[in-house]
Length: 368
Image (tube, rainbow, N blue to C red; front, side, top):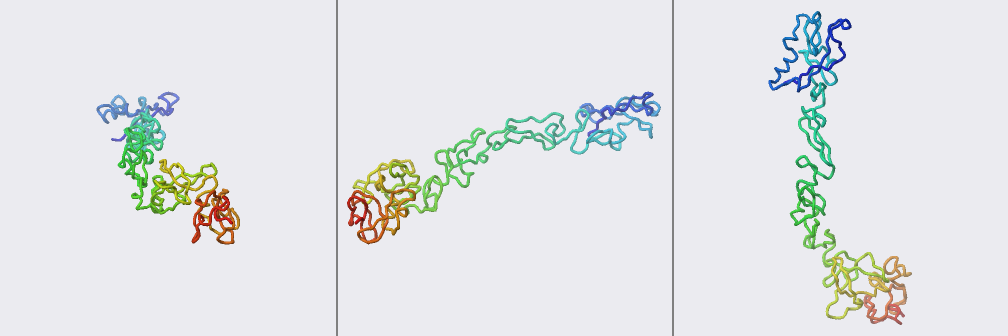
């Protein structure tokens, strides 16, 4: 059924001496006025009821709401598109209609795609909290502020787990994203399919990484058990068997890197890792480990021992005074070494063992 409506008053005067054409003011009828329970017939009756019929409107005039067609002498709804207002047109039956995608509200043509007048309605769509109203030309909808989603006309955190993409909140719990309860709550996050203490991670052990180290829930390219004593590490399973990845110090200050140290067993700590220390592993466990004298040297300095050098800057950790460049008893050339207080703190170099050469004068390993 075409949406047909009568026109708003356009300033055409009623039949009088000031209106020689006998045109009457035009009243626009909106859909509610034009259509009753009896449908379109009632609307047409309102436009063309018998008491509006005149033999010659040029002479007799028209009732309010219609205008006179001087060519036919009949009262009509409109003559041109102008009388139908913006977004309206005068159809061949001389009745005003709204353009496509528009409908009549309060006597004017309004946009059927506007949330203010959606579909065929003259009332605005409801606006949700944390969102905006939308219209597809037929029904109202909503658009939510990210990362919220639309569920039953409301903006909520989620409808299913699929909307919960954060590893720390992957489970949809009553419309809100929450920490995971099990790995099923992480199945939609391809890069972190395992639930560990409420967070989705890539791995929890080397078995999840094809034998490589799992560090901080992320697979590395380091083979498990491949990191030797006093080498830098990110996880204990990277260290050789019987070792732990622990935080270390130098001269009383905590260092940023962690290192593999032997875990002390029933026997005494082996040379050159003769200092028994309580350490915290990167996994958070307290371990009794064996290490170098952290008051005066570092793992880097111990591992550099025996390397050729020109000055001490080439020995040990960069930026620390943990290494020395000194002549040794086994070779009259400068080599990297480190401070010691006893020979069992010195490590072997090739065919030479520092503990055989000794901590000379309680000064440095391999000294003359």
